[in-house]
Image (tube, rainbow, N blue to C red; front, top):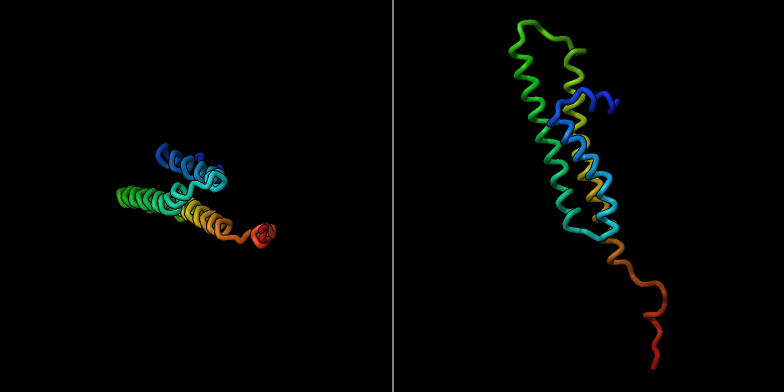
Length: 123
């Protein structure tokens, strides 16, 4: 289903789909490298990009529908609605993954040392 959304999308939307997919794939690598700032930026940028493109997409779709002389059926409008919702969901998913990885980084940074070496007193 995502293939058909991507295939029927216009070039700007395809670019955003590629950027969001790349962000989803690169976020774990950023966590491994402990790039907290980059993850924090993704946490906000992903949802904002998805919402911006989804909003612009729905605006242009509504403008086009309004100008058409005939009424459209839901089957004709559904691909556009699916594209808008996919953009928004992918953006939110990028933000959620980035937030989850930040939580994991915080938990591993604050984790106590259970090796026992810190409790031994060598005098």
